[in-house]
Image (cartoon, rainbow, N blue to C red; front, side, top):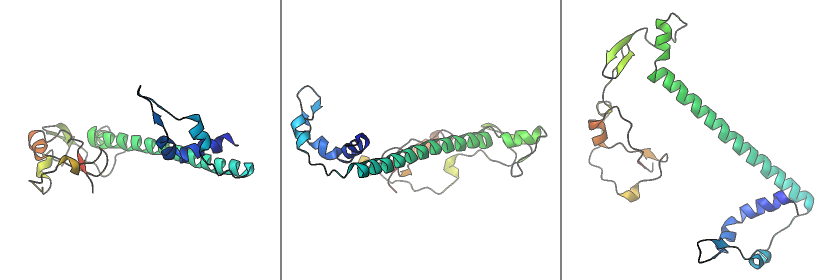
Length: 172
């Protein structure tokens, strides 16, 4: 039996194998060897096992590469956002006589946040959109952070208009 094929078979059958785990009284589980030996395995010829494992391995490699590329792209997007909209590097470039970014103003103005590009406003988020007030969400309405639509509590907008909102979100 090909070792990589066996590893993928075990991963594919993880839920069934976990259901067979005998939960010992000391907080750990164990998979009884005889139970594992009794599990039926459809075993293709060795050449097919190697081919299947190779394809799955290639897919795993591609998934990992995509994860790393996504992390790199996210870091680039964060850096660009920081440069353009927090540090205002394009405006500073214009002020220093370096090649400018055409969409950015050439000067800064004072604001409650400090220097911001001329023509920009520093206003509370509360004043930028129409809001639905009074929606009472129960805890079961929420989902994991990073999933769904963000929920911004009105109190967060009024008390700290510049601070980031909570990470609470609801399904779309």
